[in-house]
Amino acid sequence: MEVKTKVGSNLLISTTNLDADYTSNTLIQTRKALLEPVSSINGTTSKFFYTLDAKADGSKNQTTDVTPYVAYNEDVTLANAVAGKAKYDDNFNKAYGLGDTDGQFTSSNNTLTTDDPARDGTGFGYVDYTFYLKATTDATNQEIRMTQCDIDKNGSSALKTDGTDGVDNDEAWRVAIFAYDVTSTKAGTGVYTATDIADVAANQKGLIGMTGAAYFNNTAVSTTTAKAAVVNNGSSGVVLDTIDDANVTKYYKVVVRLWLEGEDTTCNSRTYAALTDMYSLDLKFELGQGTAVQNISTNTFDADRTSGKTFTGDQYDATFGE
Image 1 (cartoon, rainbow, N blue to C red):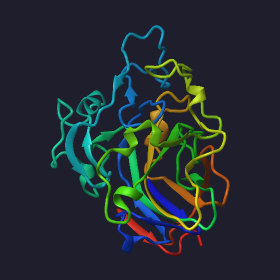
Image 2: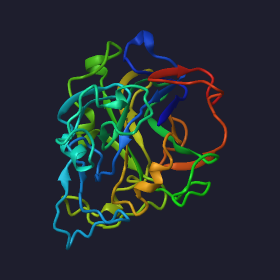
Image 3: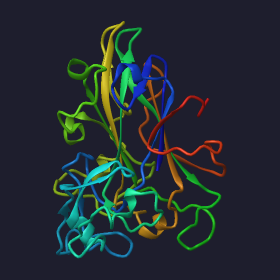
């Protein structure tokens, strides 16, 4: 998926957190990863789970099924620049028949480390898009808001699960947004690596799904929290922070995490197998302007919206969306 992140007035964006690299241009980040369904109630790194006894439609009867949920844990090192990953879960891959007999990968059998379109590389539970925001206030109590989160699907060439043209009603996408104030530690001086900000629940500023997203089972994994209360959480929408004072500059590390919620009633592997490379995600952040989003919007497109441009890795585009 290609993610385009735009910023509004008094916000700048960078992938390096170096002052000289901050820009107002749109950031385009591409990730190529084989996603397998997982389940999470908050999107934090250590709180993803998967099951091996899901039924054909993706459901799992948590009362009678004997196979428990298993923790998804990326702890085996394998650099995969295309997916933006340094580690993967070998047991997870073994469960899905990926890699060798132990679910292990090397550079020779992990095709997703190259531009090879083959889909037999490492499987992941989620992918991250990481960047930094620099905010300079011109008033008091200004909020940094996510004002757009739009998953677009190529309606002209996509296929439904029955093989006909069109796009299925797929609401299993989930996006969790994490933000951490690095002003006091890494203010414009370089990448912040002291901690995984997406493994701290307090850094999660929103977990959103599409309108109408629902679960097969309303009991969340390993908790008594109702899943229905988790999706689209927060009546005020996604707000990264409120800056109290005017004429203040602050820096934030942001992680946008994307996955397919395996407990969603529309999560069916046939849907996504037929829609490879058909998605893009458009984001926008604004300081003190716009309405904070509470869910993922979606639409279809028929043309190449980048006007023939090919983006790889992390790049900036001064014209997209203008």
